Amino acid sequence: MAYLRDEFLPKRQLEELLIEREIRTKHADWDKIRRLPKLLRNAVEYFIRMGDLRMAQKLARMDLEDFIELLEELNVPVFITVIDE
Amino acid sequence: MTELIASIDTCFLIEWCRYRRRELLTKAFRYAYVTEDVLAEIKSKPTLEFVSDLLSKGFLVIYPFRRQLESIIREIVTISVNDSRIRIIDPPEAYAFAIGLRENSVVLTENKGIIRLVELYGEKFPVRVWGAYQLLKFLYENKYIQNFEEELRNYTLDTHHMFPKRR
Image (cartoon, rainbow over all chains, first blue to last red; front, side, top):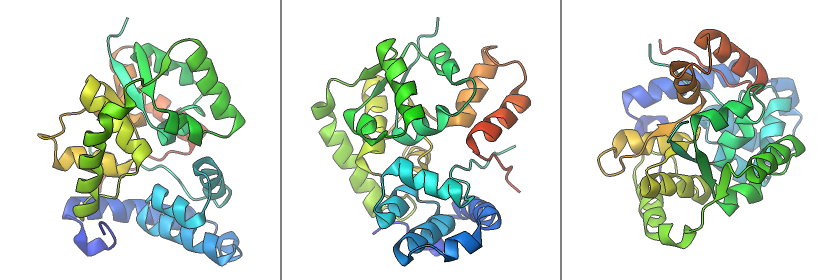
């Protein structure tokens, strides 16, 4: 199974993931997240950590758009592009 | 008139449809392919309205040769499962990518698995993969957008897509 742990990632990818993770963690409404049912909380926390929308959506057992809406309600940025400049 | 063709996945469509100047998509490309999997995933009213508008204008085209993509899909998904540097690529994104490869179209996606696949296997899969950032840049370079930085800020305001700089 691919892409489960940070240590698998090359430096550049890990850098990106850490930037994205920090942004998601900082913006997320943790009070609301803690009040979610366990299944959804796990899915949202997985997304915040890994940024893998498809896997998180499957964990949540939700349609893609519904899951994106849930993330937005929780103030979790869904799409982040790290720019090289 | 542009000669570029696109293939689009679900996440890109869902996000782009929230952008105030979403019609610019039709300036960048002559037409765009989607698969039925992508359409099946769209549920919300704003996205459905955007997609039905593009379909009725003939801009969005349902890809007619889906079955011919199977071997490419198998290859892409297998690589993504076995390479720990790439997130597992699901069929809707894999189809958009396979269309890009087969039709020489620009793949519009925000999927990190696809982006990484091209970075790591670019010689095997010579496909142009653009996210919103690259599309906005293309629109700016072709003078559909006057101020790139301002438009990027508008895009973030409308879609909440963030564009941090690498440290």
